[in-house]
Image (cartoon, rainbow, N blue to C red):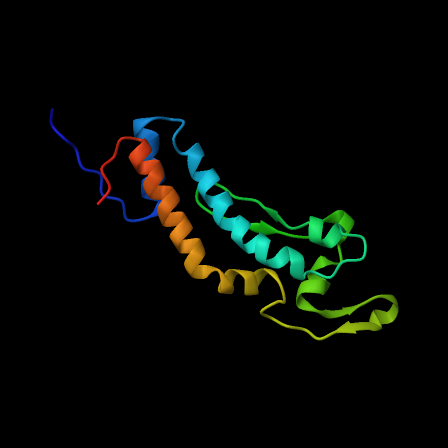
Length: 137
């Protein structure tokens, strides 16, 4: 049996190679992305101030097959960006919180866990490739 070699340079190519083997395999990429996103959420959630718990509860992983995303806020928690980044809100914009472009919760969670996120993605993608019958070098 002749062995074919797949060389992957990025996640888009990896996704396409998996789809060529089995149409359902790329769906498992989303699970790997969710795992990586949970590292950021796990860091940020306990640091978000809480009165009702809605702001903390609004932190969610919203991943695709190519990206890991963290979402926070929403219609019921419209004040979340103010909590994380600061600024002015309220009547006549009278409530102030120092503005931090780097944020207080989500982006620091990304920076603090960058190595662990990378390791988790490498582990999950390698496991997915091996599960698909590919030899990983």
